[in-house]
Length: 420
Image 1: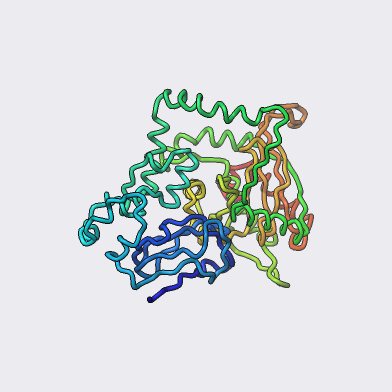
Image 2: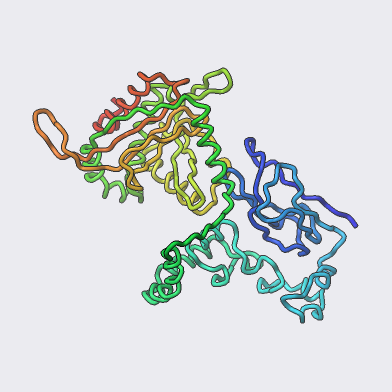
């Protein structure tokens, strides 16, 4: 018997361990070279693991196992041919299949071949979309290879669910009712234990590391967004007509930060051993909330991009993050981070530094507040800004100056556009 051992490959420079989140092929199934066997969940993304040979698959690791790089995942018996695999597979689902001629089954090219494990199974991105929208995979017809459910199939299923009229709202109302009332039972003592996902574990470790390994402080200021909101209102329709996307606050804040970061390189720097590393570009990471946790993919060279280019790239990254299709390259890098707690209703917070970066800007909710303008009291749209920084790299005076400069650009956006 000729057996090929399949081991966890080197995935990325900083990734030492992965979690086997799901098998895509059954134990004992016949697989071909380059067919996806399972999904690995790394610190940053979910990846498919392809077969390195053709033959019978033998599972070694189980779903949920944490595996180091190089650990044994499975074996493939290359001495087993496609024809020999059919009778050896337990015919639990289809007893009659054993009597079917093997040659006919192999030669049959139709995607409707019910014996193919890919049939009716979603790809990683499709699976996440279906799970997030509570759509069973069995309700979706796969149009991919061998009947696999693709991302496009999942998106169509979500659209179809959204466009379905009221009956769908009423039907579930009767079913979930018992579940909703369960937690309300008097003196309930039920406890649920759930294993943390690898991403959630990584987030936890990094947050603790940032608190323990950096001299983190936070400075605050507030910004009057009257002029910025007037600018958006005046040019929004023309902007959408030309670029096909709305002008949001994030691109304006990003450009203001990028401009000041190049003026104050210490805020855009990081520590590497006993060296300071300075950057003559601004790769700004944006915190995006997903069902599995917070991700911070960067947009590179923000200082050189237009507002429309930033908005398009941000929309693209947010879509990929929520669908679980961000690549490792898209997740790596960044010299500074912006997080917007205001979208969740936060009025004030102290964001935690995204290591190895040295600073992070926290945006918050916009609230109409009475403020003194000259000798008058006026109601203005105000936002609190928070800059958390590593005091080992950035002095207190530099952090305050940075925040003041960003505030001034946002309060006078025309000056920012004119680069003065």
